[in-house]
Length: 559
Ligand code: 6LW
Image 1 (tube, rainbow, N blue to C red):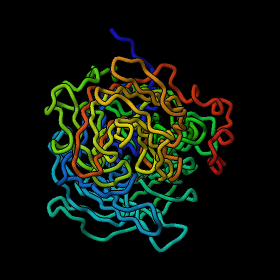
Image 2: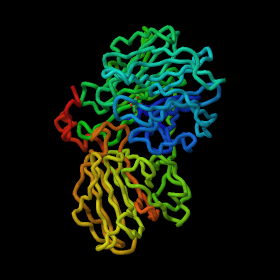
Image 3: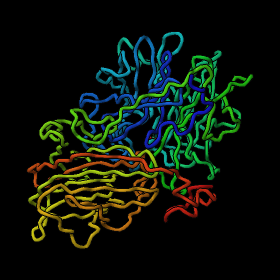
Image 4: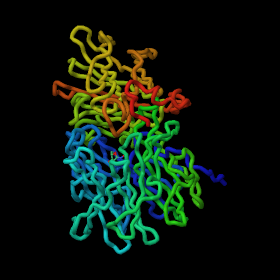
C-alpha cells in the first residue's frame, strides 16, 4: 500500500495557469484557468487528491464559441469561473477584445454549459460587458447570481469601481432585475476576480486586489445578505506576498475556494515565481493553500498570517491518485496533436496544419508574420520549468526571402525569438535569428548563415533561467551554436509591458508572398532539465536581492 504523502507541493499547476477557479464534483476536483489569446480557450486540470493534477481538456474549441482573430496580446480569455449545479457544469468567462490603452476596455462576458466536463459544451450565452472577471453563484434557494467587476472609464484613479451583482434567470437565459455594486474593495485597490460562497448563513465574497503583479492580494469580506453590506476580514486580506520578496511564491492573489468531501477547505490561487526578482517567464501559476474556519466564522490560512506556503498539508481522507500521463515521444507519426499544443487565436484546422498530408510529419502552411494578431501558422506549448530544451527538425524549400519556417520561443507578438530557415537571392537557403523585443524586430546575425540547399535542418533551443541559446544541426552533423546567448527574461509577463500569459516554445511557418508554402517538421521534443528552479537560476533571489538583481527595470517591484 502506498504511503500517504503529507504535503501538496506548490505550484500545483506549473507554468502559465492563472486565475484558478477550483471546483469539486463528487470525488473529482477541477481547476479552470485563463488562456488569453491561446486557442482552445480555458484550460481544465483534474485531480482526485489535490496533489496530483493532469491537464484534462480545454473548453472553447470552435469558432462559434470563441473567435479571437484580431484580439490583442493578453486579450481573449480572462478569468473563467467553473461551477456545477442542476446536473450541469457552468463556465463563465470574458473574451477581451481591447484592454491595453486607457480609458476603455472591451470585454464580453459569456456562459457555456455541459453535462460532462469534457463536453460537448454549449454555444455561449452573452451575459454583459460592464467589466471583466464574471462569476456565477448558485444560492441554496435555487436563484443564480452573476458577479463581475465594473470598469469605470471616467475615473483616473479608480477604474476598478467595484463588484456588480445581478440575478441570472436560467429559463430566459438572461440577466434580470436590479444591478447593485456590492463591494468597492480596500485601500489595496483594483478590485476584481469575485467569487461568492455561502456558509453558516454568511455570504463570503472573495476578490482579487492590488493588480496582478507583486502587490496582488486575495481579499475576503462577508455579509448576512447577498447584496451587502460586506464587512472585511480582520486584516482584510486572506493572502498576499507583498512586502516579502524572499518568498518563493510571489504575486499571490486571485483565488477561489473548495471544500473537500471531509469538510476541509482549500484556496486555489494565482502566484508567480520570478527568475531574477522581477521576471516571471513561467507566467502566473496556480498554487493551493489550506484554510481553516475560526470560531468567529472567518476563514484564514492554516499557517496563520497571509503569506502563501510552498508546502501545504494534503487533505485528510483522500488517498493519493497519481495519473498515468500519456508519454509522447515527440514524433509526429500520430493522427492527433499532443494536448499541450495550442494555437494563436484561431483553431487548428486542416487548411494550415496537417498530420496526414505527409505521414510522419507535421505540415504547416505558411501564414502571417510572427507579429500578427490575426492568422499565424504557429503551434506551441507552455514552458513549465525554469530550465528546458526544445528540439525539432524542419524540411523546408523556400524560394523567396518572404518564406520562413523554424523554431520559436514566444511570449507574444512583441516579444519572441525565432530561429528561421529562409531563402536569400545570393546565398540560397539560410538561417538567421529574428529577435522581437518590445515590438522591435531585427535579424541578429549580421549575415545570414548559408546551409545546404536540401535536407532537414535540426533546430533546438535551451532556456536556463534567463539564458537562452539556439543551436542548429545540418543533415548527419553535430549541433552547433548559432547567435549570441539571448536574454530569456523578455519572454515574461514583466518585460516591456504588463502581460498575462507566459513563455511558449513551438513551431511556425510564414509565407508573406501569400503562396502558403508549407514546411514539414518531423518531431518536437520538449524536455525539462534537471536542477530546474528559480533559486538555481537567480542567485539574487536566494540572498533576497531581488530588485537589485533585476534586469534594467526593477524599480517599484517591491516596497
Ligand atoms: C484577470 C484579473 C487578473 O482577469 O488579471 O490576476 C486579469 N487577476 O482578475 C488577467 O488575468
